Image (cartoon, rainbow, N blue to C red):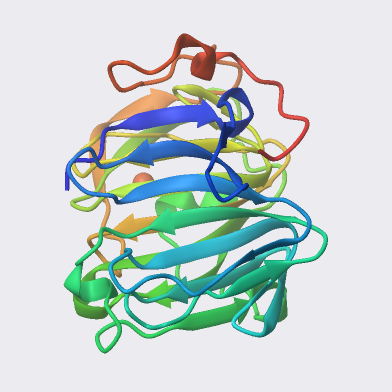
Length: 274
Ligand SMILES: [Fe+2]
């Protein structure tokens, strides 16, 4: 695992690349040593493809827009799925076109192979929010979540996280920062959250390797995001002794991997989600 820290870019600033199969994609973050990556894929109307080949890595996806039939089941916006490697799954067709956020697992990852990992298909709007288990240090965000997947052997969790509007403590409040022993990854589906790196609006994306101090985070008007915690199924947070000022209104100041195109770091007032 050697995915670089990127925190954060707006996907709207990343160009589409046309693939040989007619789909377009934008790669947001990738492991330079494997084919593990997070990308957005836009399938044109009428697109069809056979099942994933046995040597291509597991495909984890979340439908951002449109609708696509995968393995005979229509997946509409906010559908989530996990297709293990070598499962014979992934045959797809879209009549109207569809945009998917894709978390591609490394080919050969034993925790993502058929037989070890189970296929998942969830119509996420139909499952209930869990409001029971949040850290008291995050009470100001009024969080709720939906767990979409728990990987085998503690290999990572994927979940939706939402926070209510007015998630900003009183002016002058200081909050601790946090750190984890596992990676964290996030795509903002709706709304916005302030971080020390700026305002993460719809389309914001970060990949944060283990051991990086981050936050605090606050939200004026609420948010909905999809998150992953590669390397752990349960988030364990180490809180800093030092408390920091609320980041509301801070300028955009991202951490970017070396070689990131400068246009990725435009300060994007989010109007569309990708
Ligand atoms: Fe965190």
